[in-house]
Image (cartoon, rainbow, N blue to C red; front, side, top):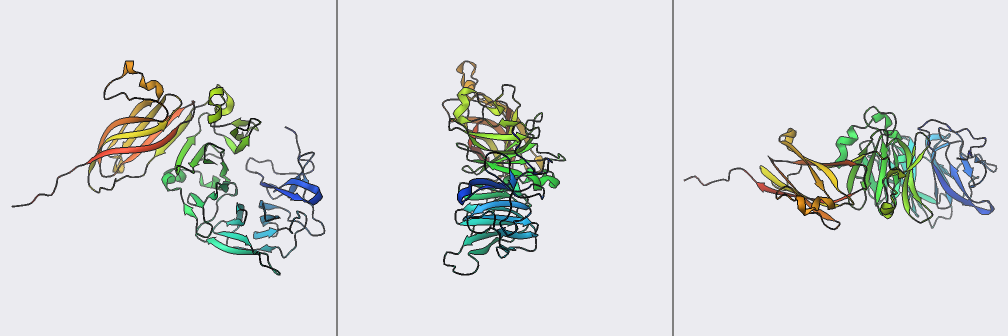
Length: 430
């Protein structure tokens, strides 16, 4: 690593993460502009030499900011030395001119948390208890060239670094869980209900430090690094698949998920790789890459890998029938690159009944020489279908599917349940 700090004195704590954006100004060309962190000066870096403090040209620039973003040819910041509810923006095309009138308080009732460019014509301003949007006023001759509008006054962002824009939508962690904004003319959508139990087990003192980032193709996923229980550093990853509207939770094994941040990286071959930075200063390639399966470029790029556990859990399923029913079989539609062992558990209300079994699935599991009727299952070309024979009787069922190993990742495409209604039928009385 080459130290580019120069005369800046940023905080060195594990939670002091910077936020930055790219900006271009006339002859100065393109450069990065970032926040402190930890309430220190805004800085800029041209890509060579040392980073320097952002200095104003006649007008003072904000001394620090919670977040920074480039939008419509200007730099925008929130939660600065001029107030924790303020939003400020620079002059058009200038990073060094910040007129006093270029500021507003979208919500004076709660501190500003972050900014996100929802699209080229809309900027989202997040407070702790509200969300607002900023749009350019194209026919404005005098006065404020931007209009401000309320998006949602029932929820705000819990963490600056949890805010992620991906594929036309903005995702963030709120006080109660994870949310999504697709159409910013409508309130935020709550998407975290399938993992509410897990969210409730997170360390509440660490939710302001949740870190999110988008994974590259072909994954269509967003990752949030979180801290569970009483952990004071990140030790788990919550992954949301945008296309499948599905969640996967990866929990730490032997410190393997002690990552402070992550991002998508495109290497010299044009391959999209997920990289994460650990608390020790080491960067690792994570979760493997479909494009590199054959070359062995998998978790951390190391043969000495740690197992990664993935868990799929349904809610309480009634299958549209209110009475007692017997679950007979569960069919899984999977994409597998090797043999994997899955633990499937089925529970009724108050864990009664509670049954479970372990079953291998994958190509090698299809070896006909050891095929046992009623027990074995066929595995063929990718994707495969696997039948899980497990009987349980209840009104509502919750199914959990868990897998843990250090091999290639897999995709769970669909889960189907075969069941029969149970109980006495109503009979006519003579």
